Length: 216
Image 1: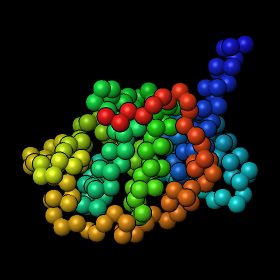
Image 2: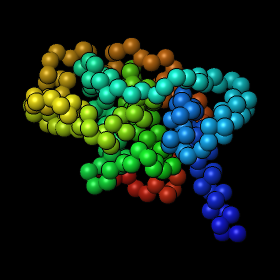
Image 3: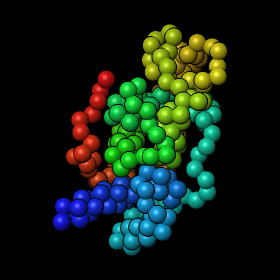
C-alpha cells in the first residue's frame, strides 16, 4: 500500500509540474525533459488542460527549443535580464557552487525551482524579454559551464553573465556602456506578466519536499 501511495504522489507531482510548464508555454520536449513524462502523456495533458479551461488560451510552441548561448549576450538589456534570472536561480538553489545540475537526470523538485525562479523574474521585471524556454535553456547552459559563466562585475561587483571564451574582464551591462533604459521600460513579451499566467502556471504551489530556499 505504501509503494502504491508513493508512486501516486510521484506521478501527481509530475502531472502538476507538467501543467505548470504548459501554462508557461513550454514545448513538449522541454516538458518531457523536466518531468520524465512521455510525449503522448504530455499531449493528452495539454488537450485535457485546454478542454477544462476553455477561457484560458495557452499557446503551444512548436519547433526546437533554444540552443544558442549567444542569445543572452545579444544586447546589454538581455544580458542584464539574464543576470537577474541567474541570480534568482542561485537564490532558489537550482544553480549553486556546491552541486552541479545534471541535464540528463533532472528531477521534479528542480523543475519546480525553475518555475519559482521564472515566476519571480516575471514579478520583478515589468517588461520581460526572456521566455520560459530560454530560461530553461539558461539553467542548462550554466550547468554545463562550457559557454556561459556567472561572474562578478570587475567595476561594481554585481552578478553578470559572461562568455567563457572572452579574455576581457567581466563587466555588467551598466558598467560596460550606456544602459538601454531601466528594466521596466523595454517592450514586453505579450501576455507574460505573472498576473496574466494561466491558473496551472500561476497557482501551483511548490512541493513540501523542496525544503527551505538556500539564500547563500
